[in-house]
Amino acid sequence: MRWIGFVLSAFVAGMGGGLWAHFITSFSPTAFFLKMTFVVLAMLVIGGPATVSGAVIGTVVVSFVYQGLRAIENAVNMAQLVAEPVVGLTDVCLSIALIMMLIIRPLGLIERNELRLYWPRRNSG
Image 1 (cartoon, rainbow, N blue to C red):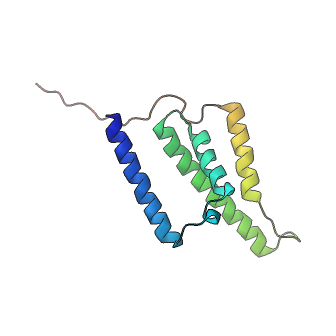
Image 2 (cartoon, helix red, strand yellow):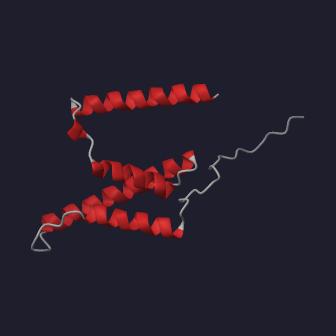
Image 3 (cartoon, one colour):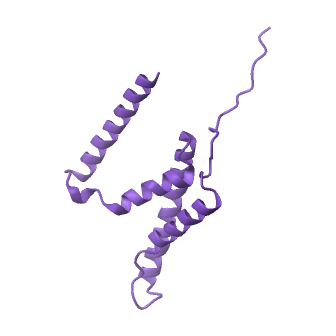
């Protein structure tokens, strides 16, 4: 069972890498930077590293929050509400959220139990 899981995860990772290479057209050391590593780590820590559903929930939550903060940062810069351009607001807010999550719920949103879909059972008889 573990072998099947390993092979399937390697397949998905390979497909993701192939799609990423097609998207950026070439691989170079500058294509992978510390900022993206921090975002991926925040997704895992906020969702909960002990469960798969926690990682998925963390990815969805952090993606929506990150894109929302980027939109706010861009709107502030486009409207020129401050004299200097606002840079790094997204990263600062994500860092604060990560620190607060580690203080309040160190094991993430989904701590130990996987989320499951419960289907009603049919009576066989």
